[in-house]
Image (cartoon, rainbow, N blue to C red; front, side, top):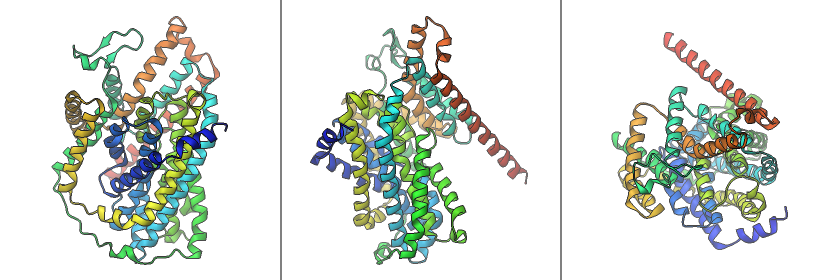
Length: 500
């Protein structure tokens, strides 16, 4: 805690709070529009952080990340369409409550629950992160390889309906991560004589094509629809009653804890946390019959859980380099571009910067609450922006972002290639998130694997030589067994449904 004083000195300047609030505003707007995900928003604006130092860059991205958790509830409550996947649970009670003429109340509950969940997980990160980092300092190259291998098991959990297609996607990501010079011998690999490829492909450029550009191509295939939204109903002076406040306390606190615990486990995420918390709140409620018909407890549980994930996913990222979900996987490149490599060094040599980021996350949630309170009407109007206006703006951001990374046209060509690849993958139902995780974890996994074998003179026994290795082997086995068992159950349920 000796870094708290210097950290506050680094955090409290106008630049950090400016970019924090800009990120919150952009994240809220993007998440409020159905079809524009938080991960898409982070990818689009990631290249702009390359021109910033570590703290303002991370404040900007964390603002987008946290506000995205709340923003999705706006469209879920107003038009019965979740702006982001994890707002689907909010929709079950948010829209019915809005239909009863209490739209403002539903939006307030979502905002306050999101703020509490976000601050809860930010405090968890602040106190738990340094302790996990101390444990990480005890790991060698063999143990770090097992950590990376454990991180790759996330792929099984984000593979969608087909585990095999998820594995194929991950292998494509691992293959892409091999482009460039060999980390151990410096020989070039898969560069095809192109000098620009010697340093590998830039993650931000690849992701713009994989996630952002393909989204525009998919939207172009669909007939654009228009939505006329009456925002007058949001202007009612809706007040949360004293009885409703009392009923919300328990689900908010419990769901914040559940969301934080789920977020720490790599490969889970906000959607799982919100559904699990929603079901738990329903089972523990004295009024379960209200769920699905405008329950304040249901909205509070879902929203506090999906925002409690935000700080928790940063615990494995900052300490072990293992991203908790796709969004923080992208943030890893924003850290590394500033020379901040995950591990104990972040909390020793770069301690003030890390504590500034962790404390800053608390302020991100406070400013999110303030913006949500005063700008809700604006966020609501954004929901009805016509696609023919929105699409060209996003395309411009895609190309501008790709060019700004290294200021050359080769990267612009890369996003076109990756956009075409992603469009093809989408047609054959290969998910993009496993490709992202393969690209992020590939190089780290390879380096630690080969270093460990050099240390042991080629003997694989080094991967079974410590208690930490065995702990991760057991964790990998348990996670894989759980996920595969769940996939088999889903397959049987689908088969039974078809036969019925």
